[in-house]
Amino acid sequence: MYKFVWESAGILGILPHSLSFHQLVLMRDSCEHERWDRLSYHLALYASMKGAKNVTVKQFHKFYQDNKSDLTSDKLRSMKKHF
Image (cartoon, rainbow, N blue to C red; front, side, top):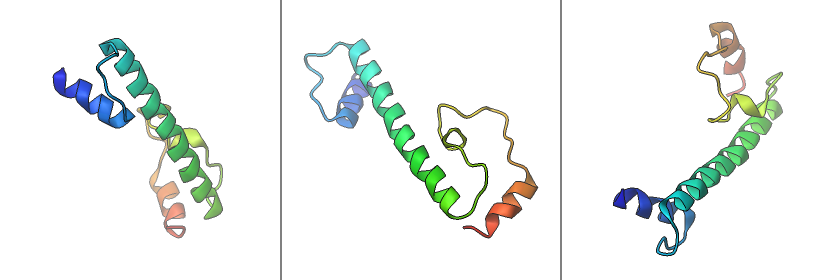
């Protein structure tokens, strides 16, 4: 738990002394979610600029993905020319 607290503080760029464990966990989760929002937006934008059709942010976002993959071999082959 000590390691998690200091890792969280490092990720957030703060000193954890005045915060409770619950506050650190919420802050770390929110920070990770925000970073995935930004990254998935840029990945979707890049894919659409390369010509991929029907690209959504949720396809790239860690927290919005389904466990079931809708990526078929035909879809992979169609994207190969773009990357």
